[in-house]
Amino acid sequence: MSDELKLEEMERYQRQLSIDGFDEKVQKRLKDSAALVAGIGGLGGTAALYLAAAGIGRLALIHEGRLETPDLNRQTLMTSDWVGRSRVMKAKETINKFNPNIEIDAFDEPIKPERLETIISDIDIVLDCRHNFPERRLVNTACTGAGITMIEAAMNGMEGYLFNIIPGKTACLSCLYPEDPVWDPYGFPVLGAVSGTLGCLAAMEAIKILTGLGEPLINALLHFDLGRMGFKRFKTYRREDCKICGRPSLHDTRVSAKTQANVSAESICR
Image (cartoon, rainbow, N blue to C red):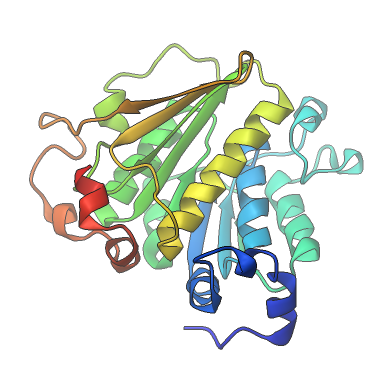
């Protein structure tokens, strides 16, 4: 556990500490939390930035690859002079300058099962912002097996979806998508403000789950279409025949202590 909030932190977070229900204890819970953001593009980069802005204690960022010019329409952690260099390292540099109180680990590498298991061993929550389904499924399998809550967020064009995966309690990614949809991971259309909107929503869900503030999405999927400013919520169901979470296993009783403490049984059953 970290030390009590410093005077500089109290000043930095003064505005959110003025929110009804968001007191020093809530801020301390956030400071004592660690999140992994898988995928540092327009979506994951925005989510990481706003987790840092809110005062999360530690961020782990994983993303393989270099910045390319077409990335600059949405990836606001980047700068034009960084083209051709590691995206995740630039994200770490930018966030460190923005909030030096945040501990950041950056991994410029592909998502591999064994490596992922090591990285999430001391993580409280994972935000899945990868651009392809094979890697999303690896994250889903690792988090489900380890009992770690995961936020699933993806977008295409003007649309986005968001839902939370609490192992043993809610549907996982494979429950909702047993098969990969048709998807071009390198040529999908994207408007920066759409990925930024979804990144903020994902960060908000993470903050709520980590601190117990508000009511996170439980057994529900949020879909939005910003082209017509439409938002809908859909009920989700855990599949008994799901190959990842349907079989009785240890993860049914291994939901992280932080999630158990902050997400009420009533909301899980809703």
